[in-house]
Image (cartoon, rainbow, N blue to C red; front, top):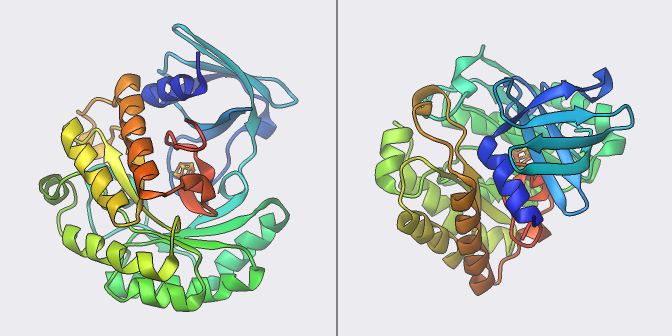
Length: 321
Ligand code: SF4
């Protein structure tokens, strides 16, 4: 079985049932996206990496030896590899969530459920120092704790502080029209502003109070500032869009120089009733993405930060296929 099919199958299952996992390999990340979940592992082979969430009901099981070698087994599937240790949230990065809480209530998002708190520049500096010898990049994301402007100001203060480490910095926050210019002035390498849904109608339904057109406008403004292969946008696969709508969204993004990060839905909270996209749809969409990126001359394998550098949660053309 090709790696792309194996990874699509694992993403479609969404998680693994850990059988034997020595204590040192258990995920203790509390600092990044997904930190409030039940935990996860980064499983790697020579062909790529996949992040697998802990799911005690999963039909896939994970066995790990003391040396970190690991095997995932399930219906029609057996793949050998090894576990990678995350630095902060994911391997080789300090991927840090500043505001853990959100005034918005996007239906698919787990962030608003937990207690609200935010990290100061001192907190972030200490976190990065704790993993400095194990990272190639710093990535910053945030919920919106008070207001878009207040959280943006906190993010700018943190970014100013972390530039001292001399690592590429990526930032993904809910933006204002001023965000790309300010981040570029601060020396940020890459940005990710998420359109989240393939259509404006789905966005209005899923993300009440947020502005779809603004995100597109900010993405368009970012491309000339940050350049080729440096502007990204998450699009969730499986929120009710058709294949045609997803294709149109992917092509619209690549056509303006933005690399889509097509993320299979994790059904939870307000979208718990929706099915996970199956492996065939994940693969089919990844092929559409590969074609659109190729036409636009874009390459997510060049990513320095954030999700396209990690590749754990999506099929990434140029890396996985
Ligand atoms: S792909 Fe993104 S969200 Fe997934 S583990 Fe990596 S950095 Fe985190």
